[in-house]
Image (cartoon, rainbow, N blue to C red; front, side, top):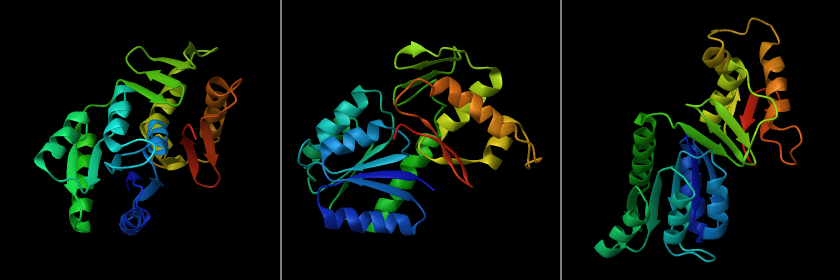
Length: 227
C-alpha cells in the first residue's frame, strides 16, 4: 500500500484518479489547490505526490519548487494537459520526477506511480527526517523539537522506536511491526514492552507542546504524524 497525495483542482479528475488508486489498495488524500497541497505535502508521510500544473492559489511549478526548497524528497509526478516539450522540461527542472499528459490511461498512471515508489525505496535511507517541527538526525542520534533539543535524551531503544515510526511517517505501524523491527520478536509475547516504551517516548517528544505527533490508533498500532 502506498500513501499518495493528489493535488488537482478538477474535481472529476481528482475523484476518478483517487477512486482508481484506492481500488488498487492505496491510501489517497486530495487537495483542490496548490497552497493546500503544499501544506499537506510538507506534513510528510507520502510515498508519491501527483500534481497538476494549472491550479488556483498556487500553480504546480511553484508548489514543487517550494516543496523541494523546504527539503521535501517525495517523488513528484506531474499530471497535466500541458504536454509540449517545453512544458515537460519546465516541470522536470522545477523538481518533478516524472510527467504524464492528460488525457491519460489509468494503467499507465498506476505503473508510473508504482515505479516512482520503487525507485524511492531503492535509495539509501534518509539520514535526517523531519515531521512537522520534529527533527531526527540519525547519524548524530539527536532529536530536536521546535528547533531545540529534547529536554531528556532518548535511550537507544526509544531512538530506534522513533526511527521506525518516522520511517513510516503518516502511516499506522502495527505492534507486530514494532516487535519485529525494534525488539526482533516475531510474535507478541504478551508483555507491555511496547506500551511502556511508547509512553516514555511520547513524554519526551510531545510533553509541553500544543500539537502531539505520536498518536495511538486503538486496536491497530501507532502513527507518527504532524496532523
